[in-house]
Length: 352
Length: 165
Image 1 (cartoon, rainbow over the protein chains, first blue to last red):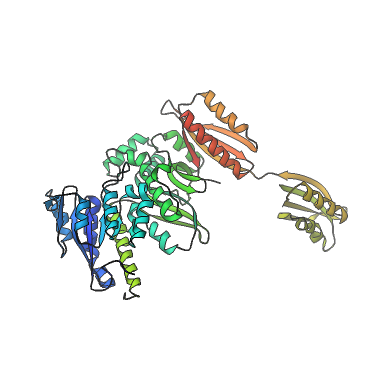
Image 2 (image 1 turned 30 degrees about the horizontal axis):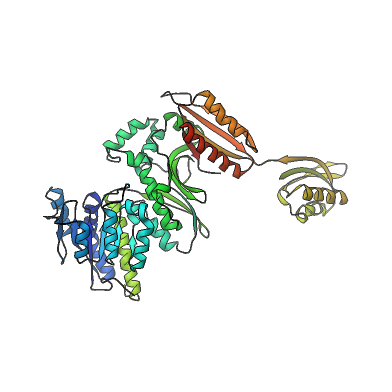
């Protein structure tokens, strides 16, 4: 049974893009860049039929011009008209196939992402998101709702940016039982810890450097206190290991208190310090750990890495770029293509 | 338990098998065999065997089988495999607090050695210490992990563990 109206060649895949900051603009650019490839492969026109930022919106059933939206946004004019009601209310009225929800993560109450995603799922629309809040806090509710309504909720972009972690585990490694995972899920912390180790610089200094280079926010709490890593770990534990946890279940220690002396003592033992998220039979935790030099988890710079242990395949490690406009857009595109592949399969392989 | 023995066998064919059979017959696991062909004393050659056995009963059975088969045991020693666990501790810790932490670990059964290393430089008033612990089994590492996690919360120090054994 195909619930989607966009299944099959000659159909449009109509996107409602909610959130038009860095990630939203990256998605619009990726749609412009990849629409021909998608058409060649699936015979489907990828169209943005509605786009929202925090105050304004633009809607056009025949499709908006993605690059014009980006230019308008960057000129400071907003996307079009001022929004007359809430995004959720408009999502109930608009005609679209997939909600692409890329508003910023809110780990306090998951809003506005949670209401937007829930509304789309209630309206039997597929959802693709990069927003960690709703999944780190309400994973089961949203997962149950999507299953009940026969639609998909895809969220590759929430963890590891361009690194294919969730889709790899849920699709290619479907027959595996993942019994433990360990990884570096925050590029900012990894950049800071790498610099501390390689240059012998103190935490505060490297943090400032990271802020100047645009790797860390003005308020770095979310990254350096392990909140971002803990949210991602909770999402992975639910999505890959089938657990029922939220961000609040993750035991969390950040990297603020790591001293130069700690880095130096670890180096004496041929080890580096990294902020590691780990989930196994013993619990779920984000904390700084000592990793032997040369170990797959001893990566440097802003990279992300996930090391999984499964019953059949044994150890699998995935490394890639964790955050950024293009990287997140890449993950969103992989989810959109995933939806098209599902539709193509349901239509008995009419794909070229 | 892992055991290392020096055996003396008659220098005739088939003796090595006769010496190793009792180990496998009694559910032992042979880890290594060193056959010293050139070390012949009184017509016997020396073989060094390392094996794991289940309990004292099976070890006794292996020894009695060797006696019956004319295999001489000249030396035996127990070998303990140890697991190393490393921790970095950073915080405003007086010596008394550090001593309490190490005493807590020392009092645990199966802890072989504890080594404390201090950093040579200090950028803050905080102390950073590397704690190296050797234990008899893996489960003990988890026990120390939990002990230190609890202490780090109650004494407010930063704990940095290794990534596992």
